[in-house]
Image (tube, rainbow, N blue to C red; front, side):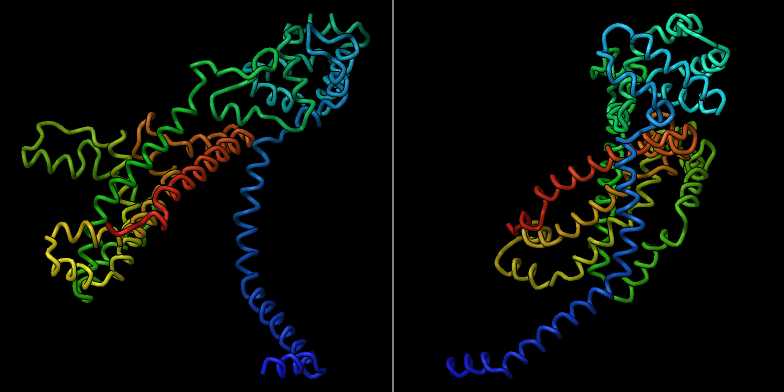
Length: 416
């Protein structure tokens, strides 16, 4: 039989049959790819490309290189010691004149102001005064116009600007910056705000995840054990928050938790407290509102896993002599870990990007990193800083997910 099969495969008809099978397989793969292609394009357009652009903006800034090309070229020969020579100052004077005429001095000043606060107005003033210079020597003239051009750290900043790529934004995102000689140093205490903000973001996200797990697990267990008619009715109540926008739900918590809101009035009527408690514009209000919004996200994956667990497993453990708690803890609970892992991971990642809820019900010390991303995007128009904060948060999230998957991954889940 084997010899006959080899003869058929080697015959002209066998070769033709094999070619037909290969064409059919290619056509099947092409048809499958055509079905996936629309979603692939959506993912690339709405997810991969924006994230890639954000990561690129975190390290790319060619403002000075574009607006001051001659100065940047002249600085390539400067050794970084003392002040540059007359050639560099002459190039700077010419480009300040051009910047004043083309109204780009403010852009140069804004970029320098990121690293050297207060430089923006001085650059604009220098450009206006430099427009009247007719001849050199330019070094002494520019220093006389503004002492800014006699500072070594200013020229170190400009030399770093000769490259279209910079680590400044990423350094600032972790509370570091460039020193006078372009060395990396820690930011002054008054400017070191992002490390605490990242820790606060992680802390609030972990807290909300823990609260939703503690509240959602018993409810999911109850829903999984109730008859379908009752559980379906209760499930509608669980998912009802999804039918209301986050802004409306957050505003509702403002009404409930304010000083003379429903919660305070009820507690005072029951003589639990004698005066209104501070339930809003603090960490408590932030965690409560976020937990309410995220509770279904944690609960639903746990419920879906519990619904698929056969009751016979626990009955078998009980028949073998295990008590109710021991059977639940050693048999039932380990089987729910995939749902717990999925629900907690979803909630944690979503909490990292919260902006509206902390802004409305939290205080100044409860704002998360998304607040500063929105600030640099909408008010400062500093896309580099906003991208660096987003990229840092994304990197931290990916690392945490990797560690989480190693510790609580499917291969780690075992029935004791």
